[in-house]
Image 1 (tube, rainbow, N blue to C red):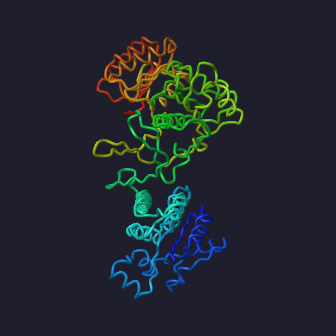
Image 2 (image 1 turned 90 degrees about the vertical axis):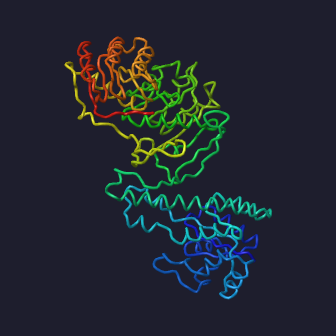
Image 3 (image 1 turned 180 degrees about the vertical axis):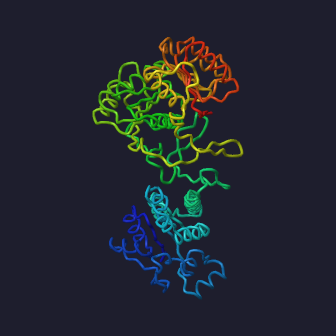
Amino acid sequence: MPRALISVSDKTNLDRLAPALVELGFELLSTGGTRRHLESLGVEVIDVASYTGFPEMMGGRVKTLHPLVHGAILGRPDLPDDATAIAEHGIVPLDLVVVNLYPFEQTVAKADVSVDEAIEQIDIGGPSMIRSAAKNHRYVGVVTDPDQYADVVGALETDTFDQAFRQRLARAAFARTAAYDKAIATYLASLEANDTESVEDRLEVGMQKRADLRYGENPHQSAAFYVESDPEPATLAAAEQLHGKELSYNNLLDLDAALNLIREFDDPASAVLKHTNPCGCGTAESLKEAFTRAYAGDPVSAFGSIIGFNRAVDAETAEALCEPGRFVEAIIAPGFDADAIELLTTKPTWKKNVRLMKLPGLREPRRGDRDYRRVTGGLLVQDRDEGTSPSSDWKVVTERQPTDAELTDLTFAWLVCKHVKSNAIVFAKDRMVTGVGAGQMSRLDSSMIAARKSDGRCVDGVCASDAFFPFRDGVDQAAEAGIRAIIQPGGSKRDDEAIAACNEHGIAMLFTGRRHFRH
């Protein structure tokens, strides 16, 4: 009779797995809470303590760390020495090990978790059994995720539970324990006083594949979407797709860019993204007005865009989205009113295709974490560029002071500029982007593009630059377009030239002291 050991923290789908194994002739061995759960389902099970003759102790810390358990997992019955040990010590070999781990990641994600609580959620016996079974996958199948149960039962029923299948399970098992250990190491590192000042000496990134994508940035590139084991509520990985075609690689990049931008604003806000750059953004007292301002920033570029909102989309805003001539690829928002969903999925010509992404935690705080970027042969790691310098630290460096209205627009433009690819120039007026110059090799070129996009709408408006002006020509270009106030980090050896140019043109200029390059 084949034997399976089941010891799980997450009991999802156990009511399907256990009866199926019994039906296939398996004898079940289990521990503590899992044993009691199986018994409540009416499933006959052998207590591990009865098998080993050694009781659970130390509050459950010690229950499976026993030679009779690990010998049953690691034994190779077709090897003479192993077979002799199995017979001599009364070991009953295991054919299947079903284990998932204490919820460490979920525990440390809680804002008020104590160190003692976190430490108690570090599983010891579970990873030991998983690694033992994965090492011995020639003889033993190891199951670490409830999502695997159906495939495992199917393979057992069709006699395809072969070496190749068990090897795939083993690979997934080692990936799981690696991610688990990484989460523990990251948490312990976060307890150190200087953690924010350094990065790890050794980096292991553990992710779970969420979905295979049709292709990458281009059709000849394969791609997939991987997520953290316990993504934060304010991340793209926590979003739920309510409607539309499957997400593409480029959709996901643009949705993440839209999410990061609209999180910057407290007032109702909307952003229009193309190729991860905002071509429009606006804030207002109502969400519809915020969207109207955002879309008007660059209606030509807005065709086929990604739209972000920091409030639930209502019917009035949905009506504006559905106006003739507009085409939207995807929308991300904290939610969608029922009337809004009805409009977006029935009224426009793109109704069947638009992806509606619901992210209730969009505006929740995030833990400070790292930003990763692959380069050939390595990985670049940095702190995320969260927040910006407080306005109390900003300095007016020109003869002319900004008006209150200009200061409001400068603050708005500065937050948008932070999310534009360098060299970044943003023109804005009345809390609305009128022109963006993004990703140019020259800051002057970015200024010229922003002015052309504004098409005269930036007269008496403001300009934001993600880094200092190396020459006065960028200021002269802004003045020619009608800009009346500029915000930039400062720090150039030619700052005096830029300030002098502003004074000549009657432009107010603020230095923030913080740069926001986005390469």
